[in-house]
Image (cartoon, rainbow, N blue to C red):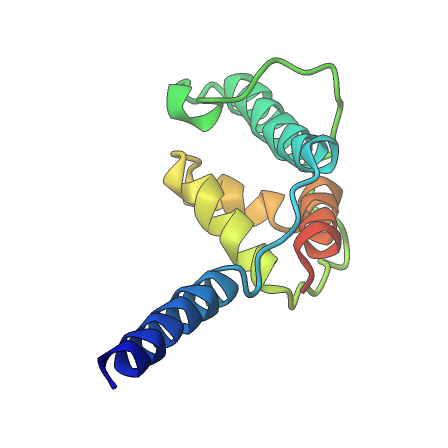
Length: 131
């Protein structure tokens, strides 16, 4: 009787551990380092372009804007498009929030949000992570 109880408890524990392992992997994106790095590079290129634009406007430099970004030769267009694009993806909000959290002035973030570079970063995020 004791042996049977021991086996039942052991089986329940193992099932619990297995279920926990499965649940921890639900919704996780397989890692693709090259695609992820390309996405980061695009977003960083946007930050470098904004840094140049801020300097051209005579605004003070914001070091946190490019913090963690490696220099890139990638050129992106941060001019607002007409008409402004309609972005419904949750990544649009996330990228916009990151821009502001890095110290981008709100008026510039609002302009960049309407740019081809912003749309590109958001669409690549959608493609990589799924919308």
